[in-house]
Amino acid sequence: MQKVSIVGAAMSKFGKRPDTTFQDLGWPVVKAALKDAGMQREQIQAVYCGSAYGGRLTGQRVLRPIGMTGIPVINCENACSSGATAFKEAYHAVATGLYDTALIIGIDKLTMLGGGLLPGQPEDWDVELGLSMPALYAMRANRYMHEHNVSFERLSQIPVKAHRLGALNPYAQFRKEVTLQEVMAGKPVADPFTMHHCCPTGDGAAAVIICSEDFGKRIDRKPVWVAGSELTSGRYVTGFRDMTIPEITARGAKEIYEQTGIGPQDIHVAEVHDAFSIAELLYYEAFGFCQQGEGMELLESGATTLGGKIPVNTSGGLLCKGHPVGATGVAQMVEIVWQLRGEAHGRQVEGANVGLTHCTGGGISGLDHGACSINIFKN
Image (cartoon, rainbow, N blue to C red; front, side, top):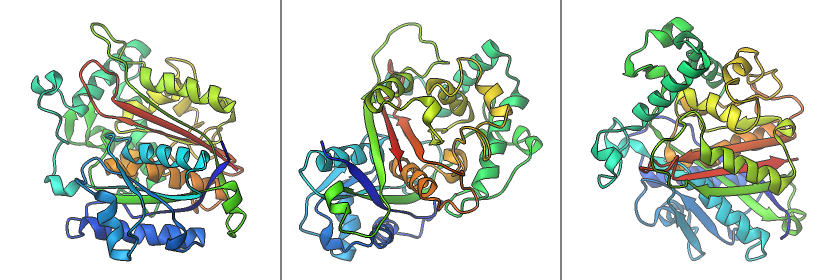
């Protein structure tokens, strides 16, 4: 296995862009990533594209307008982990010497679905019974709040933090700070959640370019090294499940820490999958940033915002940056690359040298989640 680094990173502004075609959403981001890497399109040997709702030949449709044809294009679907799964496949291809360079695209255009909740699979019995993602996470929130004495007011501090950071990110879908009172008085979605506790749908694309260590010596770009890449799927469990413990993430975290020799105390900045407010607390604990049941105290201490010991979701997270499903995992990597390069202007984590990304999703009855991808990067 040879060392692999990210040398180019770019993303679109996330948001509702119904008048933009799918390919026109994607190809400018590809060009921006090439420019960031100082590379020509002819130097890209393979392309890996992640999308949950893009349909057939997503990567080819994005690349055709800029003439990037005639090379291997691998399309990946893995729910919210689609883009991160494409990255893992590309990483292993370069690490094992199959290619020297690869482009990874994450893209989705959710306005094509007409708005509202993302559709589930009709043959899934939880979906048949009416369970939606907001309802599932609302149940998790209620259980966590009951067990750990967390009030609705305390829980509502999470969207306040997300909006404060999102306001600093020019690529975020929501760029306006909100008060605690505004969060609590928001439109109800699923008790205890109001609108601010739930991530928005929207459109967006992100791209990164990776290369082998030898190839990287030929271009003038500071590398951000891939320390490790982990992908796992949920385990089927019947009967009782502790909804306050995200088993798939806790297991994946343990595996990537063992794989890299990097522990939670070594992470300087993290982007985690906060599709709903309660998720951020659950992932603080799953990654070992604090003990079980202490996520709220960690947040209230200021540790997870700018200036804290482990800033989480400096981009504004899914709650504010947005969640165009297939684009999310790659967009998280773009944020971490900018942080490790010192280019996250206005929201920079000083001295950041190690960053983590985490993308999980895909509801299937009996599984905690369908797929979970975790990556660690370092200078």
